[in-house]
Image 1 (cartoon, rainbow, N blue to C red):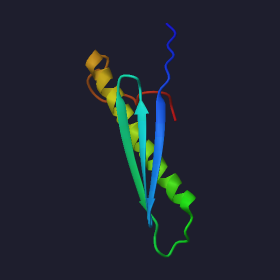
Image 2 (tube, rainbow, N blue to C red; image 1 turned 180 degrees about the horizontal axis):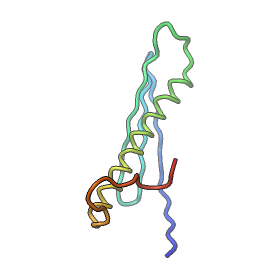
Image 3 (spheres, one colour; image 1 turned 180 degrees about the vertical axis):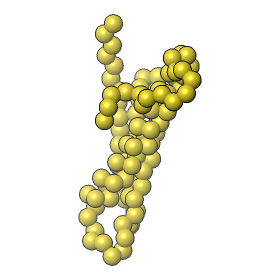
Image 4 (cartoon, one colour; image 1 turned 90 degrees about the vertical axis):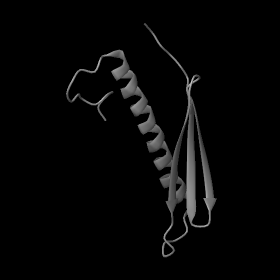
Length: 94
């Protein structure tokens, strides 16, 4: 059966001095999840805001992605599809 949905993801970046923080929010229509990430520039490093943005955003998206994988794994277990013992990772190979 075909299945198409649209999830909206918003990424917010906040810089304060040497610290950059990111918040990634996904709205699935039924659930809203938030991932967080941060980075801090070493005082000896040159000031390149894009690098802080990239690192903080990447970490927030990783956090959000892990939350989604954790929820999917719990949902799989709830269906009884997961057998005893170790099982292969969920989803397509990376």
